[in-house]
Image 1 (tube, rainbow, N blue to C red):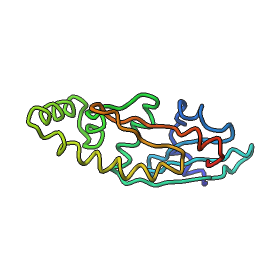
Image 2: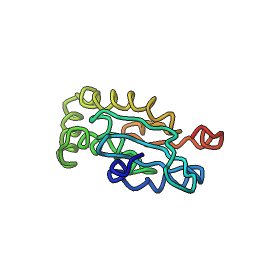
Image 3: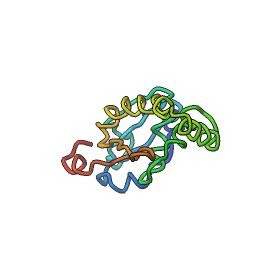
Image 4: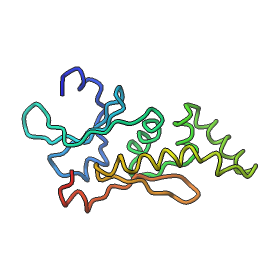
Length: 150
């Protein structure tokens, strides 16, 4: 990885990082919408074990899930991130959809993105679970980590 690419890396996701094997580093490059898992060899350059790019809409949803781990992310927060609106506006849209019986239609774009994210996160030993009636939560599959998948 070139130095210029490293400048755009976010800080590692500390709550997730604690669950990874000791010589692994999970980080993200927001400029390229890429999630990267590095092997830490003790000396530069870092070795990329797995790298996954995301569409802009996928990135707007996956980032709050990663940053919020281990907490679930409510629908209104994820909708506001997806649509680039304030959390208050996202909450208003969700409440209006509930009142008007249009909740399924309002959440459909979010559900579709979650469906596309699941296979992309699998290589990182990550998954997304539904919190029924509330939102989504990121799951770290520790059994995959101990088997050495990443």
